Length: 149
Image 1 (cartoon, rainbow, N blue to C red):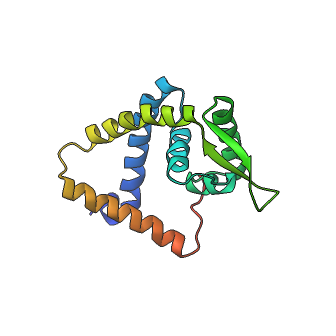
Image 2: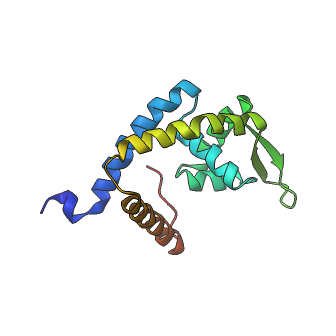
């Protein structure tokens, strides 16, 4: 039995690093990092997230997320608005330009994923996605924050 067979963690890490590299290469043409793309995707799905929310979801420190969001803001892709009930907090929203950039880049990322997952059936990919979601939800349900590396 190999180390990878004994512990899925290594396989997931290697897959993430490989996928991230290919996605980063594709996104560079659109002036986005993988974390910036992920933030646009999340903000489209869940508008009004706080900086802390974004940081948790992209597994980074709040300060790093704030800097990354600042870059997206300077590019006109997101905007910050005061939180309606918490004067210390701001909510982050996509701008029309942010939605357009996401619309340009999502098919590119999906094409990379499709190319790298060739040979898998839709049912196999559904099982992998369900496993990954369940692992993430399991960690979150235990009150664990996803650590930053």
